[in-house]
Image (tube, rainbow, N blue to C red):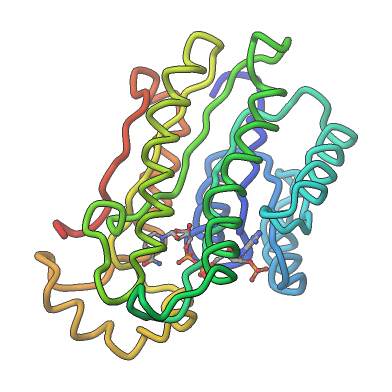
Length: 253
Ligand code: NAP
């Protein structure tokens, strides 16, 4: 890792895959910005936990990633606290909506879903590129986008809109990787399968998880920590030749 301490922003870091990634990256020596939207208490508790060894600098910043003004304010605060240091971004904040067939969905649902999953990722990528790209005087860095196996499986009858939003993330990851690699930024993605987090309660599918596990070749759900390992590797110098890859972390699903 050399002498420079990496500084990584994780969106949606208060719980689930984001929180597991924060714990792993802190253990690997990253300073962190933990973003969250609503659950300040849980995010602050995680920040305190990670600061406890006295080694890490950890900022906790509220911002709805779908809200441009809030994203700009978050990056302005990073500039104020750690100018020129941002070296990593994990676009993890993501939502689902209640399971439904397409005929039953409305525009408000899609605007919210695409606002967080797609616009939020676009906004954070843009602001990170403006700071990390050598074209703008930055020192380079790495971005990891959270896609989903749903992007390729489509999630029929459950949430084809969510699957489509993650398909957009796959396209963005490939295109942005090729756009930014000459400027020192590696962009990659991760496609988790079914991971045991609280997101499933939001879609009303939590009750079906045990049955779903039986259909996964590895015969169990994934753990947030197992996705965090892939994210941390893609961020690291060990992945220095990995550009525009989207890694399945899905137990064979
Ligand atoms: P989760 O447990 O529901 O956690 C979501 C996190 O995102 C929370 O920390 C939440 O913070 C934050 N968040 C939600 N809306 C936000 C917004 N508008 N702005 C900023 N932060 C926001 O989700 P997860 O299962 O860990 O999923 C993380 C990512 O992996 C998502 O992109 C998801 O689509 C993807 N993924 C998950 C699975 C899975 O099976 N779990 C599978 C494939 C892909 P607050 O509570 O503070 O709002």
